[in-house]
Image (cartoon, rainbow, N blue to C red; front, top):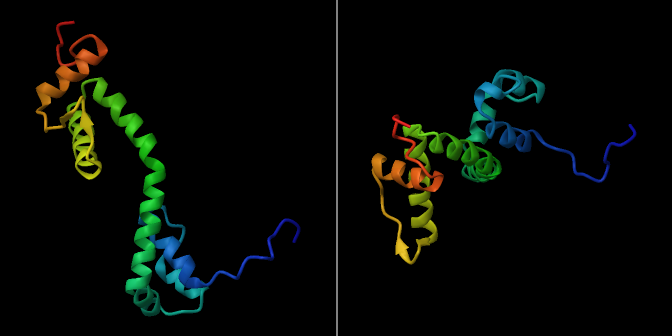
Length: 138
């Protein structure tokens, strides 16, 4: 076939299983049974290999890499919702920042970032926008 790479090693079913396990179940194209039948293995063999520590490590690493790619888009939506005053988005965004600060030792104007309550978060967002998003009188 034209355009098909021949320099790649053949994929084995374990590599395919690792990639498959990184996809949410609802988004998978086939069941474990169908996958096993197509690869001429038993369902028990599939689960045995899926639970092996080396394969679990590969599944986790690949899953985290896939998740990292989506973070900017998710954060953009979260910030948009937070600036609209949606309480849960504000909490989630600020929680993310606090966790990030703990992991990366981030400082804000030379001061440590502390946990804020909802009203404090709205005040900060309102100050950044020039109004208070929690104030429904405007």
